[in-house]
Image 1 (cartoon, rainbow over the protein chains, first blue to last red):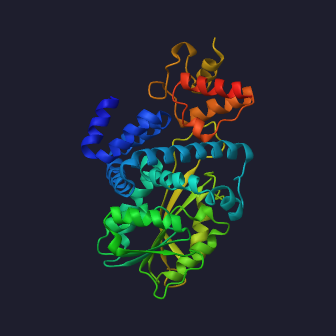
Image 2 (cartoon, rainbow over the protein chains, first blue to last red):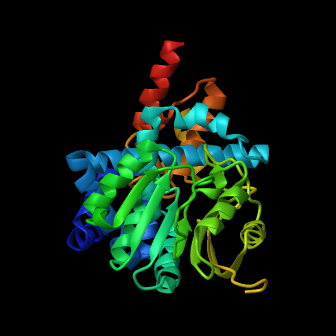
Image 3 (spheres, each protein chain N blue to C red):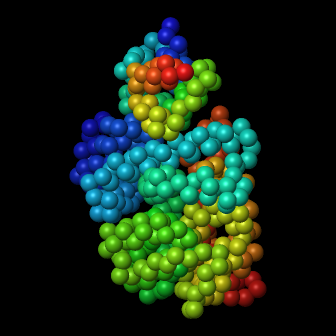
Length: 313
Length: 76
């Protein structure tokens, strides 16, 4: 069964199959969840996982599978530990950016694994893949032809590459406060052969001001890392045109070592986005398989909204 | 019954008789990354030790866990 699965993967997405084999051989404790993702979302798993692992192999060379597998292992182990502690404690561990900076962001060796671990969750976690499908099927068609997009907090650049590959008519401005993140994102964009349509800038998403407003915007996996997430949404609103579609994600009762702002439910995110001048069009909340032993169910929420042109719309 | 195998069986909700030194996440039902962490945390409480993330990534079989645990206990 496992062999059949691997042979099929090898045929459809060889780079992803190599990661799968690395996980099986060296990090087998993570295989069950990845196998479940592959079985439940086979087409999206192969589509995104195959593409993303191809980019990673181009960016990292022969060490890619080990780097991604190890980074994923580090990341998931930390997530599991944080979630168990969160369910006992009842609140996130860190409440300020400084606490997270001192314990996580200032640790270069940890951050290298962290970046690639987060990168891999988008195609190895079933509920993240469902957000990806929502983004591809419901948000990208809303983006006007030849649009300019701003991405606030591009991280490892996987959303940047996905967007630029899916919309070859568009140009992206991706910004991140971390130069090391942008270095990785630049390599991923080059590997995805979209570097000529993406500009990367070291900038604070909370204060960035574009000379010209953008036609559309996105910010993924960032809100929960901020002390005051409303400032990010407000600045996104300032940097896009009226009527511009935007895509935002938020983690809800999902403890990770660098999650600061604890959204307790989807409604809190909706209110925050609407308060910044957007009208919500559509949303998708996705969760891993519920585990009744835990107090909290972690979810990832994707929201599509437009910047209002009038008081109501 | 071996103490380590009992702990693993308890955390996996799996009969201890079906486990051996060679049992691993690849061939044992219910053994996922969360179960690995629960096994580690049970051992940490029982023996007063702490496993690093690097060590947890080597929890690839009951035999491997035993070797890591014994090395830790010898260093105390």
